[in-house]
Image (cartoon, rainbow, N blue to C red; front, top):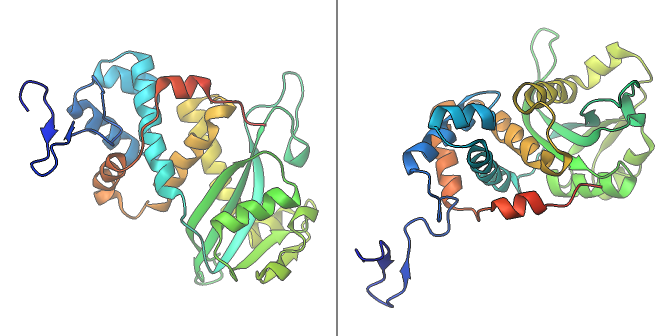
Length: 269
């Protein structure tokens, strides 16, 4: 329909835009710029900041910020429902800075956001090296109570997968839920940590570098989308040649998010 720039179904007469049902719907930014943003967010290990994106495609910071979050939502939606299997390391960590004038780390950290991590052991390592990592699952957590831990594992780990955790009390009682479970007391022994949990700590370290280097101090209410962006690229790191096309397809099949939705999102607990 040339007058309205929409398509009309010959069978039922329904009229709709070619971008309806995608993140591009009603967007004023040219599609070529959208595709550049998708390429930059999919190819770089550290993604791209909204400020840098705004400079590259010549739009305002607010527009680039919204575009990045729309693409990030497509990444997050793609990760939903995917579950890990096999032998899996599970742990948690904090991201974000300590309160001014104070240093807090570990489970007593203040003014930080809590993230749960699970990483598959893909196959045994060679010549005494640690096993190679498979896919990872990460989620921003309200707390690390037993109920929260079990909800995270129920959504991210296939039943009967074997779990390795430390001896934190919230990880107790996982065996009766069908998971072979080894709880390893670590204390402050870093050698044991590197031996039994090499990949969750490397993954957490990489996440921190991504957040600090690209987004600096992301707001807690948007942190889950940044974590999903990191997870999406990490789990497809061996698919770099096709990643732009995969992410473009994801953007065509997800419900979009608006600027109003973003600024109105409630803070995480």
